[in-house]
Image (cartoon, rainbow, N blue to C red; front, top):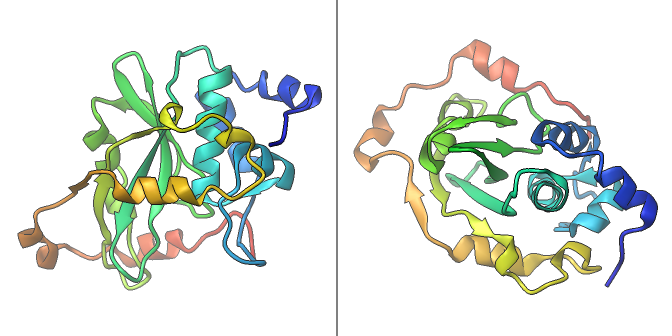
Length: 205
């Protein structure tokens, strides 16, 4: 098990709002997993200075719950796409009665959400029209219940090992359909201008 240094803790204390946490996540390089798949703990992600969406969600959830003045529970949530597209993991958080989300992504879409959504479904639906392939097909199909990381065994945030057991747990929890199956074939494809915008990336491999 690793430990945060005084310097790291001092830095994290400065990230006391969701917006500041999101800015920090954006500053991390995108983890392209060139040496194989990873699911680093928050402390390892910080030290590697890179993250993919799941690692960013875990790190964001940890910082929000530990250093933001919101009484935030460390939640993550799974957005499930069709085969051929990538799933996404976000960090939902609540401010008053409304939900928002942190999101680490390399693209122009599927990013941070302001806390203006009445419930989790409404929050997840805000990602629906942004979730498409280069041929325009809209691919988001399900979202999961929120996973409370406080219910895990202590130490996940400072583990030296990859956190694949969290991945398995997130896969097993209840998921909800985004749209009725009868509507899938009727979905209108994303437009060319949307597809072109979606190809923009923040970090190049």
